[in-house]
Every structure is written in C-alpha cells, then in structure tokens.
Length: 464
Image 1 (spheres, one colour):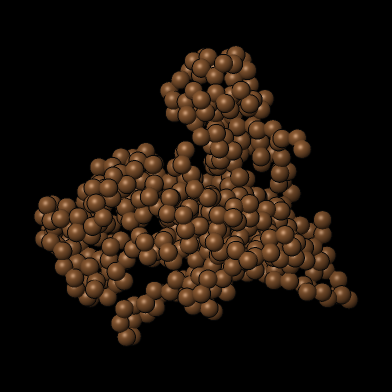
Image 2: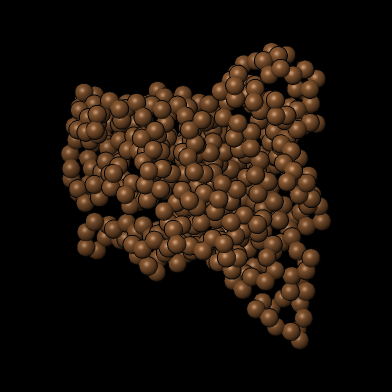
C-alpha cells in the first residue's frame, strides 16, 4: 500500500523558529538544498524521508509532531462554522479547508474568531440584548478564549508540567505534609472549616480554609491549587504573558486554569504517571488509588500526556452535564467536539447518568470512518451534607481502536465485528449521516426533501 504523502510546511516552520535557525542553516543541518526546504515549508513538496530522519537524528525531534498539530481540529472547527446558514451558497470544498489549515493556520483561526464574533452578535440581536454594539462583543467570551487556548496547546503546558513534576519529586512521597510546610514558610495558616466553600483564602490574614466535607482528593487538589497561585505565580504569569489574552477577565480565568493544571500535574507527575498508566493498561480505578486522585482527575490527566518525545496514548476527554452540554473537553485524537449545541445523543456518555458508579464501554465509528473505544462514567459530586445540592456530571474517555491493546477496558470487546461499532457523530448540525434515528435537527450542509405522503424515522429525507 502506498504511503500517504506528508505535507507539514507550517509545522516545519514552527520547528525551525523554535530552534532559532535561518532557512539556510536549517537546510544545511538537514542535508537538503535551500530551495527544496523552501518548497517543503510552503507545502509545494511533501516532507521527504531524509528530512524526517534528519529531524530525529540532528535535533531529537519527535517526528510524530509532523502529523500532530492543529490541522484536523482547525478543519473540524471550520466545517462547523461553515455549516452556518450564512454560508449556504458559498461554503468552500473540504480540499480548500485542508489547504487553509495546513498553509495558513493563522488565517483559519482569524476566520473562526470572526465567525464567533458574528454568531455572538447575532444571538444578542435575537435576544434584544441592551448592550448590543459595544466593542467587547466583537471578541470571544473570556471563557471561550481560555478554552480555545488550552485546546490549541493540546492541553499540555510544558513549563508548568515540568515545574509540577519537580515539586512532586521534592515532596518525596508525602505530598500533603510537604505542601503544608511550604505554605507555612510563606506565612499561610491552614484551617479546616465548613461553610466557606470548598476553598477560601484571605490574602490579608493569609488564612487558607478548606472544607472538611470535601473528598480527600478534592482537598489535596485545592491545597496544591492554592500553592500554585502563591508559590508558582512568576511561572504562571510568564505563561499568561505569552498567551496574550484579550481581556483581564480571560487572564483571570486562565490563571485558575493554570493553577488547576499545576495541581493535577503534581498529584500525577508526568513520568511516573505515564509509566503507571502503561503498567495498569490505563485502569482508572487503580490509578485513582495509586495517586490519590479522583476518577475525573485521572481521566483528564491521561488526555494531557502529550510531552514531545514521551507521549502517551492519544485520548479524548470530555465532561458533560445532564443537559448534554460539554463543560470540559480536550482531544488528542482526530475526534473533535461541537463548539455549539449539544453532543451526539448516541454517545454513551449520556447513558452514564442512568448507571451511577459503573463504567460503560462503547465501540463507535465517526462519519470520517475512524473507530474508537469509548469509556463513560458518572462523576456526581455530593454537596457533603444533607440538603446540599449534588452536582451531576458524566465523563467520557476514548482512544482510536488501534490502541485497544493498551486499554484494559477493551478486553472482551469484539473489535473485528463491523456491527459492533455504533455510528456516532459530532453534532447533528454538521453530521453527514442521513439515516440516523436520533437526529435532532437537519444537517445545515445538505438539502432536504419533504414528502407529505411518506414518513420514515424522520419527517424529511436528506439529499446529497
């Protein structure tokens, strides 16, 4: 079978910039001519085998980086944006989207920002928002901006991750005692009292209060979160400076995200956690016990194992609420999540609410023909006392079926039977499946045929 040609011009330019080399110097070290390198960087030629070997041998580059990156998710995001009715007569073909994502990723992101601004303004017009027309509506919401920042970083922040790993090594196994001692050296007094939320820190008195009603893993996480804000402030601020968020609110939300990232990476240090994940074949319950983390924290951490040269199994991770809204999301796989609206109802994560504490397994196939092993479980969070509300969530963790041997949850599944794979999509509005019995709305890219004399599973037929 012929190998698919690899066009990775944008990634080559990114690697060269990271190494601070001119095109001439880069070409010389790779053993190719300057014009040939120029053609590869502009996607006029595919990346040659000699260049791939040169990147690995000369610079120690993880060559899987050439196939990684933003292209697939940019294509998915652009396809969803172009499904908007405003583009009904002008949507470009998929080949053009692939060219834009590969050759001009900055332009593709600018298009997505522009469409997001249009959509937000349109929605506010529809709801007669009094603040229509103010300049801040031309930008993405702070929450979306931060979500997209982590999304396009592959949910892996190298400097923060490595700092967390060094902190965990210094703790020498007694993480809570070490963190408390470090905070005490900074003048922080730790108390355990109910009634002030899960965590409350008073900068004036330097009193940190944790709720004794919270689960032990939650208390550990919040203790580390507070240390990150106080003890790793310089690193976090430097990382935020590089992100160049458009508003102070975005920066504040991202600061919380960075502290959460640090806390999770300390609880589950990269090298040790990645090794344990391989040894247990990604058994979430065993990893949860071994690292003193919750099931959700373990699943989320598995999706961040994207360190160059030491990558884990590429997972997607998502958390949904009972309304089907995706409240957390990340994908290191080709599967991307809908930016607008709910998730596919055929996805097993929605069934997890019906079976508390049980893991649900699913073999699924997306419209692009990629097959996945998917795990789902509810992660409801008690309020800790009678009369306090329970927060209901479910999580989903999945990988492509080619990694099934590395996943204990795939044992016993019939991976060779075609009918075992359930067809799922991203969201109804961009799903290409014509015969889905659970379709909520018609696909925006396809024409409809309505026949009053005929009724199938849907009140319309989807044309080509």
